[in-house]
Structures are given as C-alpha cells and as structure tokens.
Image (tube, rainbow, N blue to C red):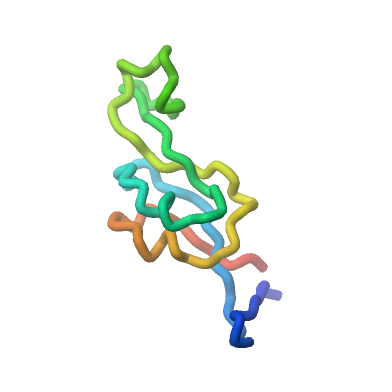
Length: 98
C-alpha cells in the first residue's frame, strides 16, 4: 500500500521522496539546497579523480573540479517535491514509498 498524506486543507496526496541525485547531471547550483528546509542535501566537491569530498577538505582543495549536490540526511525528506521543481537539470530521482 502506497503512503499517503494530507495537506492542511485535508486533500490527500502521495509524497514522492528524494531517492538519488545523479552527479553526472548535477551542476551544483544549490537551488534545491536553498528550498529544502530539512537538510536533506549538501554541497560537496568532485576531484579530478572522481572522489566526492568536502569543499573545505584541505587535502583535496586543489583537485576539486566542480561542486555537486549529494544526499546528506535522506531520512529527513518529507516528499514535498520542492527540490525537483527548482532543479534546472532534472538530476534527481523521486519515488513514492510502498
């Protein structure tokens, strides 16, 4: 059975939770991070070797090629979909829970 929720007005809807972020498509713009008040995502760096590292990682700071959004607290997602609506690259996968 699919999980359902109610809006404040009592309308039923099916939350679709953030399941994954495609690092190849993500441009690290931070739009999803800004609209999420739950701390579900965080910005990290990708090195020239493909390692995902903290942006303030002194060991790899010269090797960071670009920023990318990654899942930080996936269990904090409430399935509102705000992050998907602001993503310019459609790099996120969302799904309802059964």
